[in-house]
Amino acid sequence: MLAIGTSLFAIAGIAIAKGEKPFVVTLGNLRITGNGTFSPTTLPKNKLAPITLNVSGKVETLDHTHPPALKELVVEADKNGAINAKGLPVCTSGKLQAQTTEKARAACPSAIVGEGQAAVEVEFPEQKPFIAKSDILAFNGGVKGGKTTIFVHAYLTAPVSAAVVTTVKVSKVHNGRYGLKSVATVPKIAGGYGSPVSFSLRIARKFTYKGKQQSYLLAKCPDGHLLAKGTGVFSDNSRLTGSLVRACTPKG
Image (cartoon, rainbow, N blue to C red; front, side, top):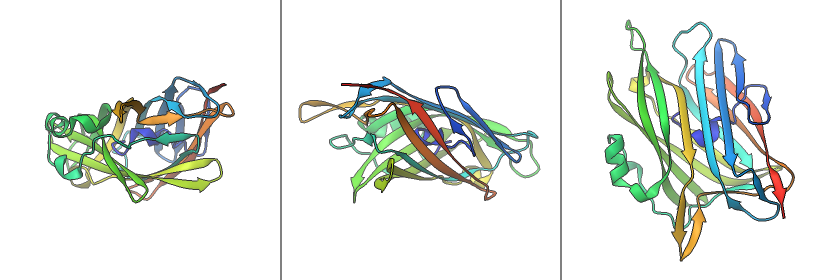
């Protein structure tokens, strides 16, 4: 969940989620609930326009045991969406490591592209599991070699204190309807004993470049819907793969 909220809602097990209702998927002992919406939903047919993205999710086990940790998330998104980071201030991973949320915000305030909350369940050997909560911040990491980097920062507090910085690489692909591929590698949390169990994230960054108003996220709607598909790999080597469809209204 700390990986990148902009992507996790695409995982829907073997189901396809339509409309704005959250999906609920069960695979073995693992259950995932998630949702993702964007606004406005009325978008131009032929040109990109600014959008705001809201995503949320929850991971749990049916028997209430400690869930496996997410290790990697790979998502392909609709070719009618785009990330626009040109001219946006950049932050580095080094400025975020071992920092509290307040210090991370102060280190790169102009590079923040999203904010939200997350919770991690930690289960140390021979101890009862506990929940550690954190605000999360998404930072623009710049564009290099055709890839856009995003750093997602969280700082877990009592009874365990630790900064978690996830790196996400986004690149253009040519795969039919899909045009963007993001790969998020999630570091071990609390020495490998922590598993993300819930998150919410809102991305709505606007900025000015060369005197013109810009938006970090853009989309168009040529045919009434946008697609995403993704695969999540967990620490027990289980994999969840699926798709999501969201309706939009073409204009122009």
